[in-house]
Length: 124
View 1: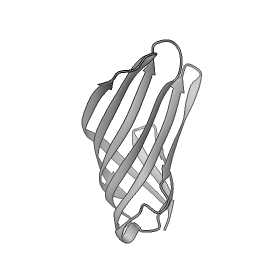
View 2: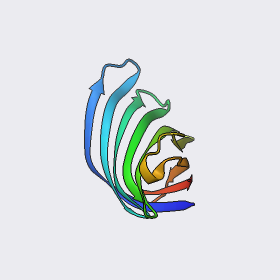
View 3: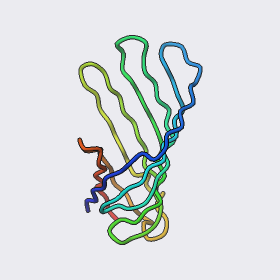
View 4: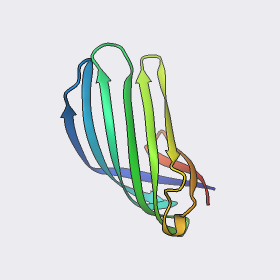
């Protein structure tokens, strides 16, 4: 199944972290989703931007409290992304076994679309 939802970042807390070789932060994002997936999420992320032309990196864990196509529950999504001058890559994976309520057993992956929408491909 596929769920597509727009999202807004309602709040962002950025806390710099002591790090040599670039700027590092622990960042918490609060999001609201509308569309096939409705609800909220909180992302805990570690973000690093290099001092030179090296890759920018972030990893995170996102906890959703939502309804997807009429089913309500929670689940976790892991984030991993890099970006450098020649491109980059990203991965968003649902953590197997993390679903609760009517989303128990959810598994799959996500991507961020160009207009800042979330596309979730999942199985239940």
